[in-house]
Image 1 (cartoon, rainbow, N blue to C red):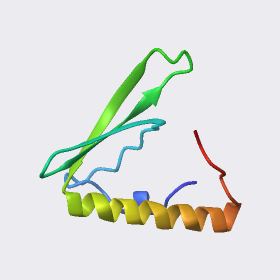
Image 2 (tube, rainbow, N blue to C red; image 1 turned 60 degrees about the vertical axis):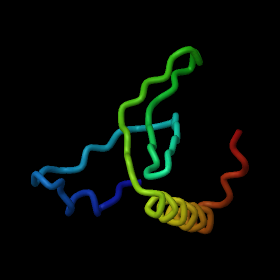
Image 3 (cartoon, helix red, strand yellow; image 1 turned 180 degrees about the vertical axis):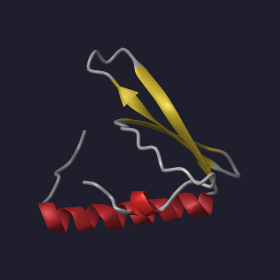
Length: 86
């Protein structure tokens, strides 16, 4: 589960990449950009907390979709099908 690339790549300021858990997502868009919000939903179902927002162009949003699909395929080849999530 640990990605060694995080150890060798730093931020523009020379630091390390901070990892945050996300199980709640929101996506929005306009004519020029996609907004990807990441956060956590709690078991009571009453509260969500967003902690990160990524803003990217439509072309890079499409590339992200491609990279995620390829990563899921690799994961399922290695660990088996995840099944359908609701």
